Amino acid sequence: MQTIEKLLESKDIRITAMRLLIYKFLAEKEIAVTLSDIENAFEKADRTTLYRTIKTFEEKDIVHQIDDGTGITKYALCEKGCNCDIETDLHLHFHCNNCNETVCLTEHKIPQIKVPNGFISENVNLVVKGICDKCSR
Amino acid sequence: MQTIEKLLESKDIRITAMRLLIYKFLAEKEIAVTLSDIENAFEKADRTTLYRTIKTFEEKDIVHQIDDGTGITKYALCEKGCNCDIETDLHLHFHCNNCNETVCLTEHKIPQIKVPNGFISENVNLVVKGICDKCSR
DNA sequence: TAACAAATGCACTTCCATTGCACTTACTAT
DNA sequence: ATAGTAAGTGCAATGGAAGTGCATTTGTTA
Ligand SMILES: [Mn+2]
Ligand SMILES: [Mn+2]
Ligand SMILES: [Zn+2]
Ligand SMILES: [Zn+2]
Image (cartoon, rainbow over all chains, first blue to last red; front, top):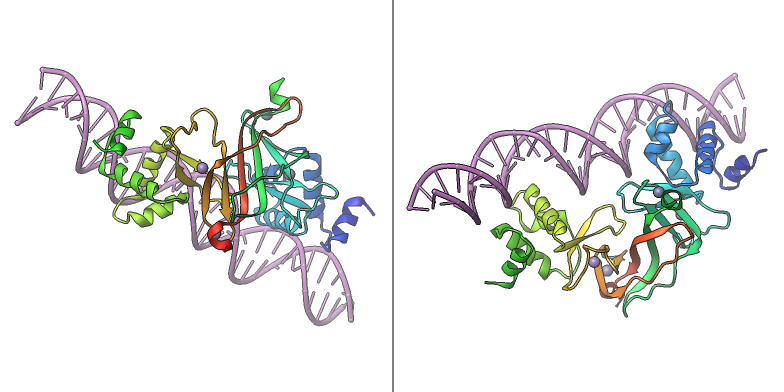
């Protein structure tokens, strides 16, 4: 059995053609994708199916959602050993103002953020905007 | 002449009744507000006017926009000496998961964030989510 | 193979953001 | 003060993304 199948099975997700394709699509991309991106890649499939597939992946911690400030939610595969289930997104995200792409900087963890007395920090969203490596050279 | 009038004038914004009212409304609030919040406060005014007023304020760096992850953009007055025009929002924002309110933590500047080689950081959006001081006691 | 549960597709809805255009108000120059 | 012009306001409509109800299809299990 393929590794993707194994992964889905281990998360109690039924293996369907659509899910395998979407998973592969996400795995090939190094950048975070929008629902529209997936839609464009699978024109034969219905938007709802893609939407619900992503939602299923999200619930099962296969992908995590990224709010990069563009107003359109993006998604990216979780890394091995990612614990999105416990705390949301310890790594930071980079959004390129030039090519409009967003990437996970999984190596770059979010530093401890101090909040005033009385405030309790539960999780943190950190998005750096600027020029990505592809656009800067 | 009142201070608000002076401020608007200094920013080359025409003084209108609506703008003064909206400015005062924002000044009274300690929390970031949505367009709907303003709408509810000024039921006689048209939504478009409120929308464009806020946009004008934003362009002239009187308010700054806040994306707290709720999907609804919020706005708050810029502090004196705020340089939103140069870089966006050096301070962090706190969103309460309990009361759903978002506040500017203007005293809490965003720490320097390291990005990988080739990436150029232009600005940073940092939102901390958790329980606010009002809700935690 | 029958029975059941989950996945998919279609249509529709909601919510917020944004725009075009007509009308009104405020400023400026005579 | 008045006319002319530019900016502000209100109404109506649009668009995009997210989400839902329900019928149909597909997959799993007995
Ligand atoms: Mn990520
Ligand atoms: Mn702020
Ligand atoms: Zn780029
Ligand atoms: Zn609170």
